Image (cartoon, rainbow, N blue to C red; front, side):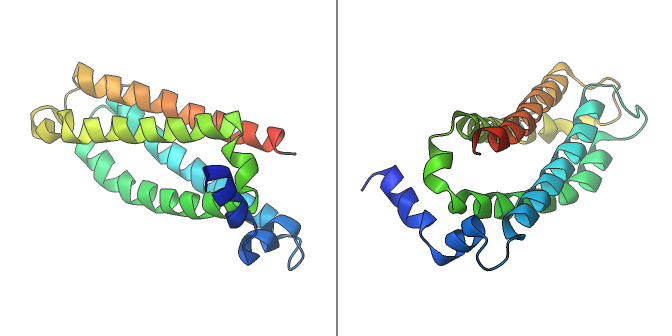
Length: 167
């Protein structure tokens, strides 16, 4: 069984059918989509605040560790809701999403953003006490912040583009 065949089975699940057809509630898909947009906006907004601080473009006297500890719980909560709502939209038309180039680009960028975050947290962030108040932060921290902004802007861009290619 290949990936498209599995996606067809997923699309035929009762929940996926209810979301796709609107037979139960005609407002279900638009509500899920709106919640997804709010969740992604919150993820992007909270991440960009930290990234701008890493770039040395926001609130110099505030510790990077303070930004991180204040924002990351919100970011992870919003990301959790984005994954749930995104998964619900995905199952409704799984085979079509799988072959959609914009969806593929979005998923690739999410993976790259995650890797960038992992390299940052397992790398330069381990020595945060050495540069926490440094303004601007070290080059590796600034690079991680800049790359993160590019990836997350791309995620938002391709995510919105999906909506215009799946009509």
